[in-house]
Structures are given as C-alpha cells and as structure tokens.
Amino acid sequence: MPNNYNERHPPVSFRTIPKIMKFLEKEMQKKPEIFFSVHDVARDIVERMAKGDLIDKKSDLALRSQELKNRKTELEIEMLTQRLAFRSGLASASVKLKPITINQIPENNENIRSPYDESNKRLQCIECGCLFGWKNKDEYVEKMGELKQHLMLKHDRQFNALEREVIDNLTYEGDST
Image 1 (cartoon, rainbow, N blue to C red):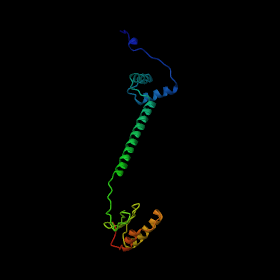
Image 2: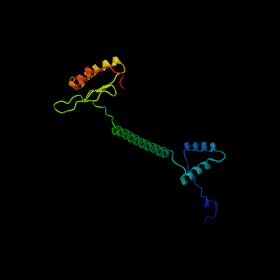
Image 3: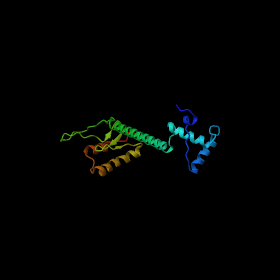
C-alpha cells in the first residue's frame, strides 16, 4: 500500500511542441472553471485516453464514413429489389384480349382475325397488335390510311381478303375507346 502522496499519485512529466502547448492553452481558456492550468488540461486528456473515452477524430470520421457507405449499399440493394419486383409484376400482369370476329374460314383451316375491334371501335394490326383509335371522323379516315401504311412498312404486305372486306364495309360509328 502506497504511503505518501507521490506514490499514490505519481507525477508524469513530458515536453511538447509549441503548437500543442497553444492548443492546451486554448482548451484551458474555453473552460476556466474546470481547468486552472495547462497541466490540468493535459492530465484530463491523458485520463480520458486511458479510460477509452477519448476517440481519435480521424478514426471517428472513418467509422462514420464506412457506416454511410454501408447504408448507401443497403439502400441500393433495396431499390434494385423493388425494381425487380415491379418488373416481375408487370411481366405477370393479366392481359385482356379483345373479342375476335371470324368472318370466313379459309381452305387451310386457319382462323383469320378481323382487324376491327367492335366493342372498342378501333383497328388493331393482327400481326403485332398495334392499335389505331380515333376521336372524330377526320381521324377515322386518317387511321385507315395509317393501318395500310403500317402493314406496308412494318410487315411488308398488303391487306388480305378479310382485312380488305372489313375496311371496305366499315363506317364511322363514333369515337373509339
């Protein structure tokens, strides 16, 4: 058991550079009620460091930076999973097919669909499903020409017999939906 004060509280002495001395003096001036001298400030820093309460600012910033990078990565992964879920939801969405009008059955026993959708009053390309709708009679006439041009440019063909018959017999009945 230590008997005297020096054995119970051994003195520590060290030399420092002027820059650190100025720092210690500024710290002492910030809290004059706690620190009476530069030695008190130095002792406080050494004691906090020994207890583990004093954390190096650089390592603290590095730790915070790493936490933020990890959070960013987590958010990116979450965003990608949401995108994939959205895309898979689109892929599995049910498609409502339009009613098919069959006017004739050719010799090769293939059903030919009409390009006109009676329920929605619009034209649809049989090969690719491109829709042609209209809002008034002028657009109706324009869309007839667009369908013919679409077949020539996209599918390199003319109207077949059924398509020609449907287009010739079709009359304007109002706006398409």
